[in-house]
Image (cartoon, helix red, strand yellow):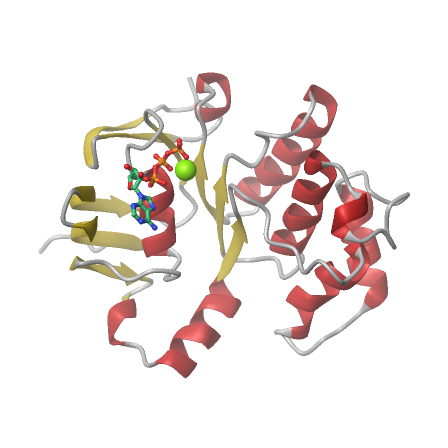
Amino acid sequence: MKKIGFIETQNLTKIYDRNTQALSNVSISLEKGDWTSIIGPSGSGKTTLLNLISCLDKPTKGEIMIDGIIVSNLDLSRLTKFRRENFGLIFQHHYLVPYLSAVENVMLAMYYHSTVDENKAVKALEKVGLNHRLNHKPSKLSGGEQQRVCIARALINNPQILMADEPTGNLDQKNGCKVLDLIKQLHEEGHTILLVTHNMEIARLGNRILQIIDGKVTNNHQTYGE
Ligand SMILES: Nc1ncnc2c1ncn2[C@@H]1O[C@H](COP(=O)(O)OP(=O)(O)OP(=O)(O)O)[C@@H](O)[C@H]1O
Ligand SMILES: [Mg+2]
């Protein structure tokens, strides 16, 4: 019998409108603890794939199974619970609440776990080098600083699955390394990582590289940490 992966998709297809088929029949199987780097040209469907796996969007066709659960079968309240218990998301475009400070934005993620702890939020922001910007609103932060608040927010609940879309795209080398070190640490602790990047050096940090071109998986191989 075929072994079922920890994250499995079958014939995943997303058509946004009649002319845009963003994903075509993507069937992948990822193991628990894998770090899968997703590469491919701009517009090839990488963000679409992450949005579907993280259940932010629904496929036009196909199925997603995570940890043995077909997520499309969950009703909204179960899905919300499943997402907050399993996923940490770092978006390509940061989504911060504009009228809350950095520390309050991070506490918001914890709120969903009903443990609002300011100290924990402060520590998470310190880890991404933002201890001097705790009370700034997003409009008073640079693009890279906003991205680091999102990263702190994604990591605070110690998510079983971290999905990151170009997490170092807006960062300088020093802060990019800091973020990659945090992701490496999560991977070493056994968390499952899906990371979209245009940078091959970063892609190779993963143990698996998935290439998407024109909405299709064109390469899916183990890197063996080469
Ligand atoms: N909400 C949407 N409505 C219509 N078309 C969309 C939508 N989101 C994405 N697309 C289209 O779907 C295709 C895949 O987009 P996607 O954002 O997944 O690409 P990507 O690989 O993440 O690209 P990038 O590297 O530029 O971020 C593109 O052609 C894009 O224009
Ligand atoms: Mg994208």
